Every structure is written in structure tokens, then in C-alpha cells.
Length: 427
Image 1: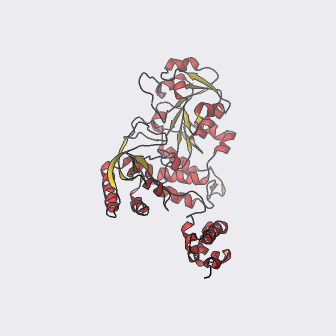
Image 2 (image 1 turned 45 degrees about the horizontal axis):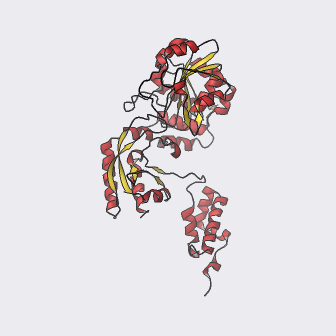
Image 3 (image 1 turned 60 degrees about the vertical axis):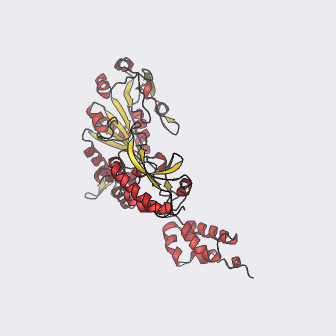
């Protein structure tokens, strides 16, 4: 009997199949060829039948030429750093696609001359935060702080209780020290008085830095000094609010926001664009026009600037409809419970041990660490966790009471059917 593996078609023959012509145009010949070769090897090993090589290739091909895969975030962490933080709105995604080709990002179509880079995004940010005389955008909030240290220079006065680590081992004091600035630590870990700042301020002071302790809270015998008091010391106050909240939010009463900080006397406010603002990764600097212009003209500003895709996504986030982060914060628990019941019932009808439960979601991304958001979830046997992470459209949940929990506060309703199909595919 002839070995069917001898009939494995040549690589160029498989690549010439009509079904792969479009894939090559979208993904590139080399990437598609690598999947063809892998399928041929599986056929030679007897893992798949020879006549299924093409189908195997088509099933394995990625949706894009990039290796990152879209996932369904069912963790209940709205701004999940490991999953890319804020998911962009449809308006922002459309803006990014539109900006992918040649654009007028730094060109005035009316006069045919050079124009201010990203003027649309900058104008949208000023409109969103009228308290800011001017704004500047860099590639993340750490870059915004670095640019402040490089530009305003000298000695930076900061409370010992605000010498925080910002993630992945990076620390605010080390970041600032790397610029050549000198740190003047005042107060103690749990209590810092206005007098501590006043004694430290001198002719070498560049600015006072007020850092929001994003990932933790110190409670008990504590004291810190609000921006309103620091602003009386006659040196610039830079307020790092971290999470990017532009206005007070009723669900997050303790979370600092840019509008209030500027109204209270901060000279500059720095924030992230990809957290509570719900936009792309970016560092936002808002405040006094003279200081912002100094930052913008510093030589390092060129190295820290953002690209046209970020500017397009940021402007669309500010001007467009409610982004997913805001929607996830606003959704009612009753609505989530209804969705959990429907999804669980659909899965139970297929014989799957799925139960609708109450759960607790969080903001994540260093925002509002003590706020618990009542939510609802679908509870499945623990074995589903690994299977869901490796399915065609990966689903990432969390563990609770020995089961796999899929929290719906971080899953948009449009993904409910995909979630159901993913679970069904793991049985």
C-alpha cells in the first residue's frame, strides 16, 4: 500500500492555492510560507492527513502580520496592564486606520506650509480641560515626569511617602535621578507637613512634585499636604495624577483629576492617556503656557514625542463617543447580572457546568486601588481557564473558589456570543 505522505504537495503548489493568494497579500509570503512548511512537516509526521494541509494552514494563519492576538478580557480588571490597558473605542480605532497613510499631521493644507504637529489632538485636550493654558503629549507618563525634571531642573522637593514604584521594578526617585536632578526628600513615610516643604524650598528648587500613590493607600496615623497649600510656596507644583482622570468622577471620589488639580494651583499636571481616559498610551502634560512651552522646546522632547497614530487615537478618544473604559465604569450591576444569567443558561443547555454569580471588579492600571466595583460573572470548572486562554479567540478570566470566573464588567456586550462560542469550543 502506497504511503500517502509521498503525495505531499510542493511548497510552491500549496502557496499557489487560491485560498492563500489573499492571505499572502495581507500577511506576506514569508509568514504564510512558514505555516505551509509547518503543515507539511505535520503531514510527514502523520499528525494530519495530506489532504488537510491547506485547511491546516488556513486555520493556523494569524489575522494580521503582527504576533499580538486580540483577547477577551474577562478578568474584571478594567485597565489591565498585561492586556494592553485601555481598549480603544471604535472611533479611535477608525482614526488610527485613517492615519495609517499620508496625513496632514504636521502640514497646513490651506497654505501648503508646515503646521503645528498634532494640533487637533492638542486642541481637543485643551477643550477637555479648560483649566489648562497649554498642553503637550509625550509617549507615557514616566516620560512626562522625565521631561519636567530635565526642563525645570535643579532640586525636586518630594515627600518620602510619595517615592513610589510605578511597575516592573521602575521607581519614581530613580527615574528622576537619572535626569541629573537632585531629590530633596521631606517628611516621613506616613506624615509630611507643609512646614517640611517650606523648609526645603530654596534658590535651587526647580519644583515641588506631588505624586499620587496609585497602587496603594496608607491609612491610620497619616498626613499629607494638598496642592492648594503647596501652591502657596511660590515655586511650581507638578502634580502627577497617574491614572489620567480629566474631571471628577462620581464612582471614584478619591481619584485625583486634572481639572481640580489645576484649579487648586498646580503649575503642571502629568497623567497617562491609556488608563481612565481610555485612550492610547501617552503622557499628558497640562498647565501653565510658559512652562509647557519650555518643556516642548527641550531637546529631549523630540525623543519623547508620539507618532501620528497616537495623536489620531487620542483626539478621537477625546472628541468621540464614550470609550470602553468609561462604559465599563458606568454599567449597572443589574445589567451585568442579566447578561451572566443568559450566558450561563445558554451554556447549561449544552450540558456545561456554568453558573451566574456576583463578583467584584476593579479599575486596575494603578487607578482607584481601594474601589470595588460590584459585578457579575460566569463561573465554570477550573479546567476551562487554560483551554480558554489557548482557543482561537483567547479568553482571559481569573480564579475564584477553585473555579474559572469570567467577569462581564470588562467584556463588552458585543462579545457575549464570542464568549459563548469560545466556552463551547473548550468542551
